[in-house]
Length: 111
Image (cartoon, rainbow, N blue to C red):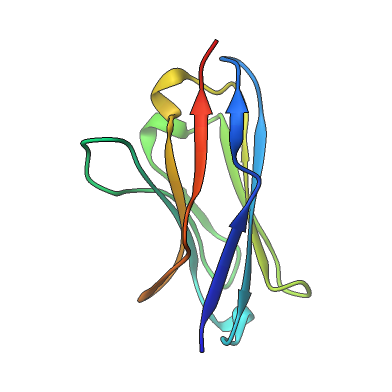
């Protein structure tokens, strides 16, 4: 059974940083592309960043230069380092390995 467990969300002021983690089990982690999505209230879920098995990365334009996705295959964990956070980054952030989803972690950026 595939399990994706996110952690690291919280409340942060604009300009602050958070690091999200997603621990995966039930899959051969190193053989899978991993992604982070987010869903803000009243909006559709959107891809934020993805990292391939080779380590190549993709970012949506809105987060380029501020967010960094990385993976540790030895720990079966994918990370999302989020810097220079803005109020519009407020959302529930989900870890994804197709077709599976984590439960989500809330990120709130507010003063």
